[in-house]
Image (cartoon, rainbow, N blue to C red; front, side, top):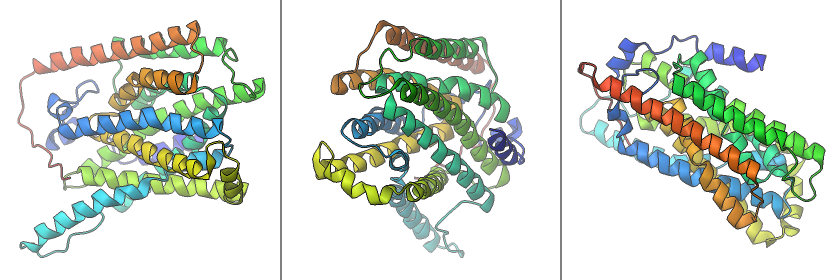
Length: 387
């Protein structure tokens, strides 16, 4: 943890975005919120849809892998970022458009990548932490029901709020503090009922380890979201060029590549590559079902990560965390329908507390936005958002 804290401190050595810089970029932050101009951006809606697809489908695919005979934790971690080559398609389209614009009269050639070396290094560092977070999450999902894992992951909003305060100076309000308290209470209730929904074949020690690993994954992801916001803010402050959505996709490409390499090294050390063919032959859904399940996991998780980093870009780290929290009921219902998981009273109360925390935070954001509308309007230079 000390190493990660020092790493983030190094990322923050470029000073955080000041209000003047934010106004120069056309984005005004008030108490940690963005203007309605940003929130109404259609690309933000697209990223929300991607988060819905990833949040609903990713955990189900991964849990199905473990339920039907899969047992490789490093492989499961790799699947969460292995879909990064899909991002090359929109990047190639964007490059083609930039090249056509340059051919119309600009003397310089259009670069294929827009990232600066400093942003590349920051994205690679975030990618390493993402790889570790994927491993913790995969380990937890191997031993926990999807419904329990999802509620525990919702505590990332509390961790996101805390780290956002430290890294990007996100201000706490009474509503955000209430949301953090409610989410923490929900996780504590699950902890007191630990083992009550333990799946068949899972020992108490394995269940406890999965519980702890999932909470660790939530904490680490709560650190990653502000780190992404910080790196994007520094990209805005460090260059005169507009920070476009193309640059955001490039960041996700580097994050996915680095995290995949991290997991691939773990697979090699654990001899997972040699075990995959045998695991496919013995898989309950057959060999074809095995590989289709792996491909589906990679694709849906890529949707989730791309949507998350886009939500951070167009909104904030806390906005992304809130969207992840409100999607918990969707995952809960699907887990009960497809896997027939038990949903007892304790889970119901924990879920209600999580949703109450979300409503509290969202209501506070609405109130802050209304207060901001009463401020005198200032001219802004709207960011150009290339596809």
